[in-house]
Image 1 (cartoon, rainbow, N blue to C red):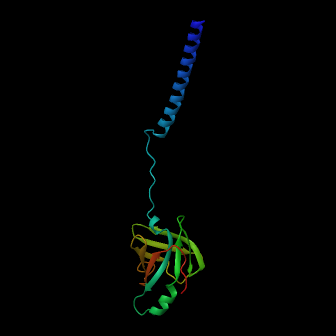
Image 2: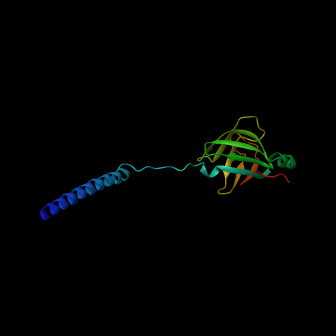
Image 3: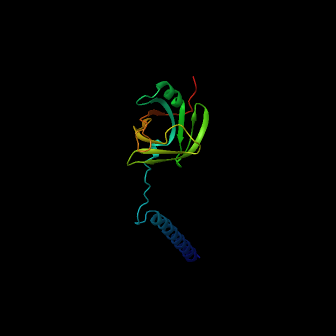
Length: 161
């Protein structure tokens, strides 16, 4: 009877070891699948990513015989919300007035705005600056007005004072 107990114990012990080995090999297979030696995935950052977000025009400057007051009235309070899917919404103060698409050429540093409705604001600007402040320069092949806009990143739409 003692021998039968020992034999039964040995069979159960060996069977449990075999299960651990098969479980370990399944785990190892999963590890190998996720750490294979094939090419690693590379996610390239977008050059236009720093432009994404809500931007408020702080002030505008013009060149030549531009009426500075009229220019200020046209641009102050304006905002532009550039979205990651290259669409945008724009407006003045708390009102949305236009939508459309935008693109950025990192080589020329030119942002192009494609409005859905006619707009008095230029559609092509050369970008300067980084972070939470940038200047849009109207000195591109398709926007020769020479207007300059200073934009700050915003967390809410501007309030009329």
